[in-house]
Structures are given as C-alpha cells and as structure tokens.
Amino acid sequence: MSAAAGMAAEGWAQRRERGTLFLMKLCFLGLRWLPRPVMLPFVRLAVLYFLVFGRAARMAVFDYLARAGAACAVPGLGANWRSAWRLYREFGDAILDRLDAWLGRLGLERLIFEDFPLVQSMRESGRGALIIGSHLGNLEVFRALGELNSKIVLNVLLHTRHAGRYNEILAQAGASQLRLWQVTSLDAATTLKLRERIAAGEWVFIAGDRVPVHGGRTIEVDFLGSRAPLPIGPYILASVLECPTYLMFCLREGRRYRIVVERFAERLSLPRPDRQRSLADWAQRYAGRLEHWLRRAPLQWFNFYPFWQPGAGSKADA
Image (tube, rainbow, N blue to C red; front, side, top):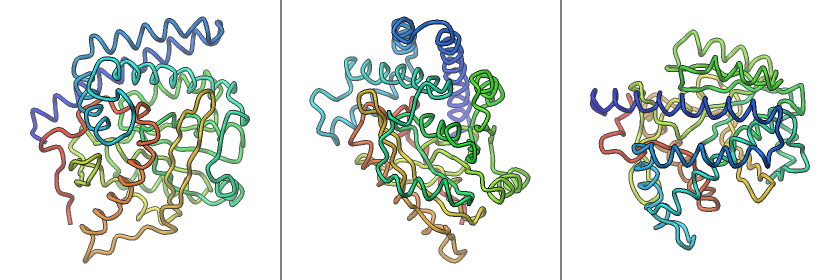
C-alpha cells in the first residue's frame, strides 16, 4: 500500500469509527429509556444516512457484494442498492443486539451453539485461549458470554484510537468482564501483558479479517475468487502466546444467534526455516473457514472498507 493510500485509508477508518461510535452511543442512550421497537426506526435512519452519504464505504460494500453475489447462491445478491441496504440494515440490527447483550437482555435461550461441548470445555478448563474472530455476524454476542459466566474475562484487541471511549460505553452498560485494548502494533510490552492475561486463564480475542491501516504486514490468500490481503498478526500472536487457538463466527438467524467455535491449533507454531509458508498456510486455512460461513450469511459481513484494493497485500517478513 502506498503512503498516500495508507493515509487515505487511515483517515477513512477514523471517520468510520467516529460514526460507529456515535451510533453506538445514540443507541445505548435510547435503549436505556426506550423499548427496542421505538429505537429501531431511528437506527434504520442512521444507517440509511451512512449508506447514502458514505461514498467510500458504499463503494467498498458494492465491490464485496459483486464478489459475494458471484460466489453465493442468494437470489438478487449483487452490487446493487437493494443488497447494500439489506447489509446496512443488518448492521444496524447488529448494533442493537450488541447493546442488548451488554445490557444483559440477550439470554442463552437466544444462542445456538454449533458445538456446545467444546464451548463448555473451554469455559470450565480455566485455561487461557486465543480466539481469532471476524467481522462476520455479531461478535459482541459471544463476548457477552463473559457476563454470563464471571469466570471468563475477554480481552479484545482493536485497531482503533477510540478504545477508551468504547470502554466507557461498556462500563455504563455493566460489561465488567470485557476489556478492549487499543493495539496499533503488537510490540514486546503488549505481548508480555497478553501473556500475563493468558496465564491468568483469560481469553484474548483478535479479528483475522481486519487489514491494518497503519502499515501492518499482510499476506495474500484466495478469498471469494480473488487474491486478498489478510493480516499476519493473529498467527504471530498465537505462536508467541503458546496457548490453544480457536476460530469463532457468530451468525444471526432470525432473533437467534448461531455461535460457531472451531479448534484451530493446540499450539500454533511458525518454524523459522518455513515461516513464510507457515504463515501463508495458516492464513489460507482461516480464509477458507471464513468463506465457508460467509456463504451462509453473506449480508452479515460488516467490513466497510476496500478489502481487495490493488496493492493492499504486502509480503510478510520471513
């Protein structure tokens, strides 16, 4: 990615984060005093505004929808306004569900576990774990499990300057078992703190489909029929933390959520002689699982930036 493109991407990311933060604060204040059916029209108007006036995000969504339409057997899905509105509407609903989860209004009866024995064993083992998630569906529903079981503390890594403000909203919502970390790079100090969290039996969550806008290293994979860059950070972090690593996806099905947790590696290793190939293999394996579940719910992948932009994928250091 060129310096100019990087600066443009960073500026766009900051504007998008501020918009999302404003929408979350608005929804949070509204849900504290108004029932969800009353709040829903205001949320729909807000996301409609972002769709109409957020040209950069809209163009990125159209690009994604064109690829998803070719790959997924969903009638009418494609680079058109109707599909884009459906995706933005899903995003607005996801924000309301996110806050419902943090406010304790989303109970276990609305959760469907693809492999509940695995989730149960993770919760009861007391071991720390790294969870690689995505922007598919509503991750906060799974994070809210930390509130349903006080033994679980979730540390969520974010590439954002607004982590402190998100934490304020979480504190007001009572989400005491969820910690957001502002991480622009995984330096030695941050890694050491995360190792301490893992040793204490806590979970660390990182998204595997967010390409860094601050010059982070990426590696190209096959995704939805084209080459696309994915960050290498999750796999380097997994190798350093030396803990079990899992994949997690969460899909909305009507008023319920299907939570998918899959074993990824008991201990992810990146041997020095084949480090580049190992990184590529792990990233491709993740991309394959993301695409598998994305085909189930293509309108729930909330990645509002140019994912396949030319030259975005740079080679990872050997």
